[in-house]
Image 1 (cartoon, rainbow, N blue to C red):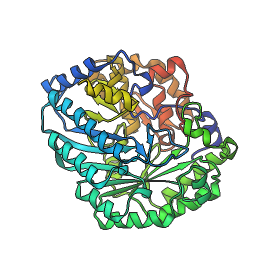
Image 2 (image 1 turned 90 degrees about the vertical axis):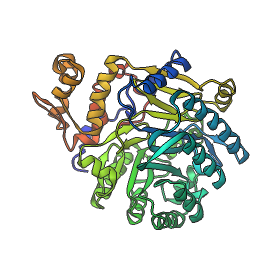
Image 3 (image 1 turned 180 degrees about the horizontal axis):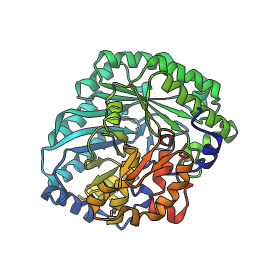
Image 4 (image 1 turned 90 degrees about the horizontal axis):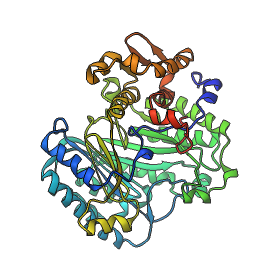
Length: 460
């Protein structure tokens, strides 16, 4: 793509956070435990932490029937379907603990079922899960209620059940349509199957259908990925998430089954990204930011036009900034000025709940500096601009004095056409929007201090 020059790609061929939170989850500490989480819930319930805005809920379903070699998610590979029923019992225990501290009937405007594979659960188990959630919370009309779907685990009848349960958004994991690539990553799903499911979802009235793609997988070439993009464009989903594959076999064991020599070169990955941007924008998709695209009439594109984008642990969202209650093994939540994460193993998660404890094992209470920087980073990531006066009034600081070093760093980005600096604020340029993670990284105090970016994916 013409705006992405080789010089820029060389400069930004670095790793960096996705900023679904700030500080990022790698900064969580085990010193944050159940007592801290209970205090955060109590502050919300008492009204200490701002207005009682509707909640967002995330439920992690960790089970998968088969292993996808590229996957970096927390999952449990099993054919034993009875494990889902047992897991539901523990989710119910976790919900009861929350009700004990928050009371019943708190409003919810956003729900996301992620995994793993949420559709590992049977229809009856999904009905049971939604019934339990409705017993504890009040779901508001017009909210975003989404579920991740493995096309290999559903048919039109199952999609109808999801619609009946109140889900209005689906996300299909596609990754790539090329049969050789699918075989290399151990995820074979025929093109026709996905097309039939998307067609069925439209007939059932789902408001938004997302397709996930990954570039940089083994055996991919720019030409093969062009074919996948053409098929996706003819499928015409409302949203597309285009992720770069991060090969980190030392951290994620499944990736050790991928042959490094089969991975595309850095140059080919750049070509895939460049050609993807061209293909999707030429097809009428709006570039939302980072790896998100949406059709102009989709709520996400409308929110971007109107300056109402937000960002949470699921990525870009149209829902207002709100507390996130995270349920299930390894899930990450946010309440007030704190982040929390549940136990990462099923054994520890269940054991803590059996003892009557929240399964929170790590997290972070944000400092004033964290909160200020979070507001700066999220303004840049979501709106693409920042007014100094708004931050000054909100936090009673002198932005240009507090962030003088960061503004000096941005001057080099300005010379490359990524940002525009003025006496009143920072504006990310259309070209800079493709590198917005790099712009945000300037304000990450932790990252600037240690410069160890290797734990993150590449920002391009």
